[in-house]
Image (cartoon, rainbow, N blue to C red):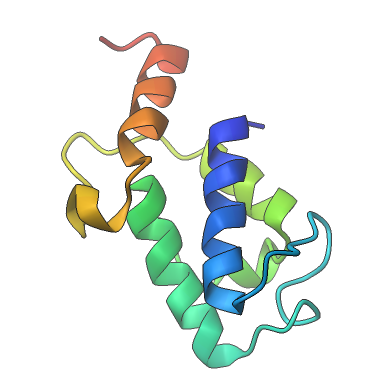
Length: 105
């Protein structure tokens, strides 16, 4: 699992749930999430990582650890992620690490 992706997922969870305490293995709904916040989580994870995945994947991957593993396995997009750098300040580092790991320039 990619530590940068894990940190990004945890940061999004902290923001969406409004808490500093984000457990790695507690499901989103048990950690205080609800359906509205799940939609916000989905949009912010996509913006923070540049990954494209179905929203339903968050039900199958409901913890920080599981979501980080999911997002670590999704190749980085060729172009900039929707939302731009202002929406995801550490997106560049994530993309660079993914490119480096895949052997792309």
